[in-house]
Image 1 (tube, one colour):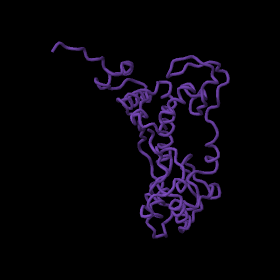
Image 2: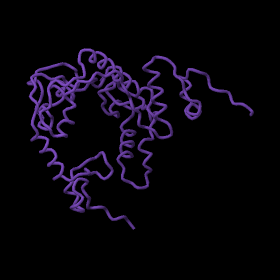
Image 3: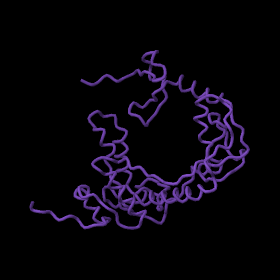
Length: 277
């Protein structure tokens, strides 16, 4: 006997309306149900309210991506922001769709970091953040992991979504990106004090909260969050990433080391010898 599919949903913003058909909700692939928590009517109403809020007039603005101060004309319009402009400049916005590293056509074959099989380069998806321009795991492994992540199968444990251990090769692009962010933050901080450039004239609380994007706050630290937490794998990858960034060995907790012998290569101290008592 199969379970009857759920064809209705209650909006989190207007629960008094009771169950509504799924067609009344927008799609959202990031959640298990596949639909947004609020109905389309509430979502559109909230968006229109932001669009009608009084805008803060600015002549110049600091791009949230490159950190450069540019004229307002160099930003695309966005009705939902306090100043009516996007947070990133037009150059950065247009450049986001361009690959940082194009696919290296000189690479004919590649070994998958997950299954260990050597396959043709065409069996790997593009990855503009990897210097080779391709992912380190093959298409089959990527597809299996994605199917597991977005699976609605009730028999699949939820923790399996996070059951993934990144290889050293996969961590290298993340380390490089972390260095870029940290360097940009350090360079950006001294010349941009955390002050608001324009006073907020709208008394609406939501407008004031959304206007925080206009405050340029210097970043003194860069944080990287590991979320593949199943059986301590997040901690393993975090330690490996720290080792890459520091260019040396790190302190490794002994219980974690026993379960993941690969940590011996980056451990600052030798493994504890077992005792009789």
